[in-house]
Length: 396
Ligand code: PMP
Image (cartoon, rainbow, N blue to C red; front, side):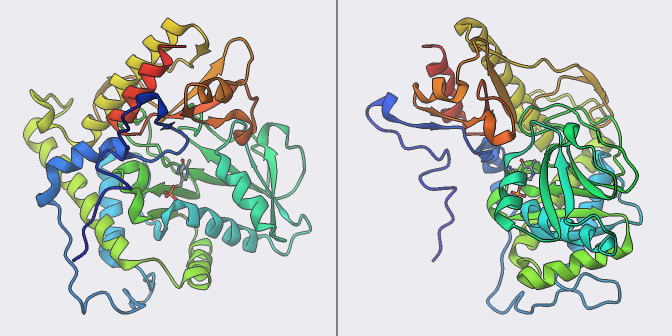
């Protein structure tokens, strides 16, 4: 049979070598292993079984107005969860699944470019305020598309005519809350809301952008399922995105959709029940009673406290401070706990280089359009990896 293991080695995904310092502590990627202990407790309560003859067709929904490759239950559950959390408007919107939100980013750009194809300003400029998520620039530059082009920092963008601004909020890499900065006629926004969930940031409003992207990877931590979704206001943009999905990959994997539907429904349903029985704010007497978002929030808050104390102790780096805000979901004031630490070296030295010297791999500032005195550190790794990171930081 097939044994599902979680990553390359074990649940925590780390090789224990006899010589501790030889282990590379890899905090370069935002691999969400942090969620493993939460789901390990749930295991048998959230199982997906697929028989040999199931999910065979290219088509999952042939109803008029349906997304041909997408199980109708998937969109229903996505909407249910957003209603429970209150982070995004879904009423009357189109839900479009993709192979991670990475695929949907390209799909959304192609669809938005198609809406302005008759206008002179081509290729369509794509901008994002620096520091920006490294993959936008890297994906677009690799693409060499004739219909859209990466134009870098939104704060430097001065041209007239149509453009796309990517608004990542909370931002990857620095965790700040963002709004569009260009705000000119003809502008279109893709809101990348991968981290707009209560474990990372207080939910202060139900967002309402034209195209919003979310991903299972950062919501529940099931990155390997490669499921993301777009919430789209405009019918034509949605239709074009479905066409792009059809051309690129003839839709997205139905096993992934099924798994995502199961996990998202579990989260939405447990909170619906918990609102009714426990009320809000959520008070638990033991971590085993926590829901996904309290679990994520507690673990991240503990990690941020450890990191801040280690950074203070070693005196080489600086971290951003995040204001406490009222969370409409938790119904109390909470502290943001970003998924990444954006570490600035106070002496202006190469921050990633300094950590590399401790055998800690991080993603350097220039990848995000920023100075090498910054580096991005994932806060989402396994407990074991995170603790090794802190242990080594304290030796600096
Ligand atoms: N957007 C942002 C801001 C991200 O940080 C990530 C993952 N690191 C993604 C999109 C892509 O996620 P996925 O393709 O796993 O859905």
